[in-house]
Image (cartoon, rainbow, N blue to C red):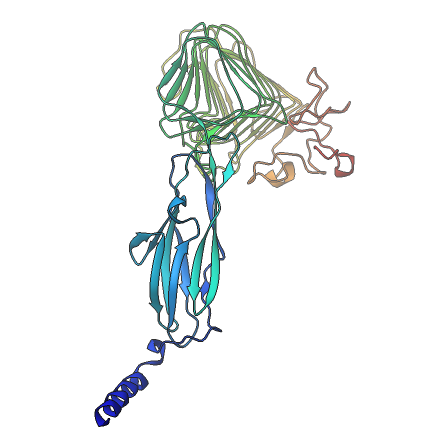
Length: 455
């Protein structure tokens, strides 16, 4: 009896001497706290793994509590990987969390094939059992199945459908005398080594509602030089791009040695590390298009190129890169090497367009067969291209609604409103009808009260 009393006394004394944060409480009123109630992951292409997300689990109480169990609700079938105390697991039992202490849990999402065209949500939950309480932290992600192209050459006339995205991991080539047609709404996601090479013909004709998009693989990354771009070299047929966007490439569109006119209508070349449009010995017709944010010239034309632009918005503000080139650079010599190209003299015409950037001089035109014709445009230049143009005395905030978000719509007091001249281009970038006094640039200003719900 004396011995039992002594043991009890020693145990009680030992417990009483424990620091408060080590004393275990089973009070059901005590609950865990979390750094977030939802772990949100990006939509991933099937077969990919996400970055690791961290979840901090807090014991706000003075005393220790026992986490009876932490488990993934989906168990072994869950697409999520969980690391607790350095152990990869779907269930962890009996974890003691001291008072005012925290536990770090690391979670990664593994995107698995779904055999569906649209993105498929993949929800799960982390379940915590503590002192009779059940608490939940949600895990949310989605998987997008894709068609995959490695290094591949298209050898016969082909139509690429828009039912799910295309993942380009290497160079996709269209052989000479082969026609590639791309359905409206198609999306191409390019990895770092990817490029599109066209030696045949290309029909990429999207719509305002369903544009065709070429961009880098990671949708959350908006940075230049994430992939190579589209290269059109000695095409054997027509090149038509309509409602097509090329984003985050090194050089968005390179065209050389084309014997038939290249048509660019309602296109966007956005956020390129080098050139937006690099042209050698070709004839380009561009209208209602946006060329914005580049590390070098937005339009670099050399050799015998003939360029005709109508209702273009060419912007150099907002790039993360320092650009020394002017936005428009026309010359007989090839860029970088300055080697003379054996060709006819270049020709350049621009009407109803915006050329605006941070440099004092954004236009450099040399060696053309006749003086460049630039009319009814808003220009950042020290040169005089005639009195139909507007020059220099504006801020970029005067011209566009939000450059940072690539929104180049006009503000209600933008100086380019009603300053263009009527031409055969009767609709704007958004396929809206221009009025009898059209606006300079790709967009026609329409007051909010006059907009339809789709505009």
